Image (cartoon, rainbow, N blue to C red; front, side):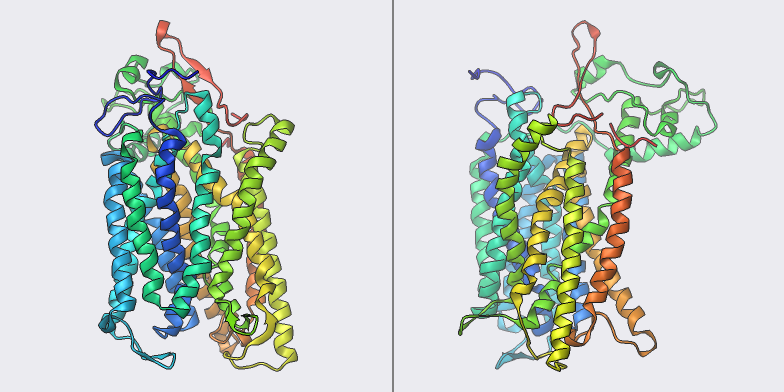
Length: 584
């Protein structure tokens, strides 16, 4: 039976900085107040992202290449700005206050965007479904609204999920077990928001008005924020223990380079480290020496220069970040594949027969609901059936290691793009058979042909999207888990920018010398199948790099220090059976 008077063991506090009782705070009770915000925020984001390419082409008269590039650039900004938000949270004001300030900016952006598509003077005038060219002021206001949302997302995205994970005490076996499922169900709430956006909001935008389509998630965000603050008495907060993370991370490689000609001692005790009692008294996390990236150990060599060397703990933190960076690099290509859903997959869908019955037409952007539906169906199956089954086989509480989970997801993604290429080949044959040339002509082929590729991407994301979020949170150094989560968000952001770059370069290369663009304005006279085939090839090459990098990776260990008697106990991480970072 749980003792009602036991405090949390991980040092978490309440908003006033006082220790909190384990029985009255945190866990799923606290997380229940957070899930609503995540659902509404994802509904807002996907409500914009899913159909933005159509708004840009039909209302603002942008061409296909420009609209795809602008959607990718905005999506990239939404996922890149969390680097700044995470740094502010980990170094200065904490996750709660960073989230609070940023969420208000996010809501302001949503209000401005709703105004941009509602207020007569701020939107292009339309008659009989044809819109006039937008003025410079209207375009500027629209994009200002979008990028205000991106700035707000910078503080909310990296902190709300990590704040949720903070509600589980790693030093409690019961709570640690609950935390294994946290990211699965966190993403499940995210998928619910995305599903409503791609099924409901997209239809509302195209049939009832863009103002209503953006106004609904804005109102939902405001309500979810009220619910979030109602839960304040139940929240646990991590204490900020490092004032300048960036300075520490930069200092280690610089010091190692300065000492590059010195011999690195074999005896770890000869390297500079503070007394364990310092870490106990300050509440900071001591990290013990590992044998990876030995060249960085030179930063901790004691010299006669008078300059204070880096501590072993700071060197080990830098090693861990370097290891995470190598894994992050091989996740960028898979992130570019995800960018297809909100751009080319949607444009592809606009060319197909979207009728359902005699009166209803499926919005092309609702194709994203196939991705989300497959996610929603797969998450419970993964958590309730796959994990217990694999746990019996492997003895790993997660069923499989996180990197194995990522690898499976990446393979499914490659299959999805290969299927997309095959479907595009089929579409081109139908176009040739019926002599279709105009971009406005509907290809007599059901939009449901795109169901397999979207569904496969959804199933793949249960493995790789959730796996990436969990991996970067779990494997990050203790004092920088918000920043660690930005490996996940920045990977998606750079994936969008990379997609924008690839689309632009492929268009320029294929049109050189008067050639036909693979991704032209008229998709009925383009070669998307070639482009998808190109993506399959680079994805297979990247998969090989991932497998090599993953084979070198060793998971970090939890280090639980027992200061009684001055001894230190090393406890292997309960969630993974493997040892620490990248061995080269």
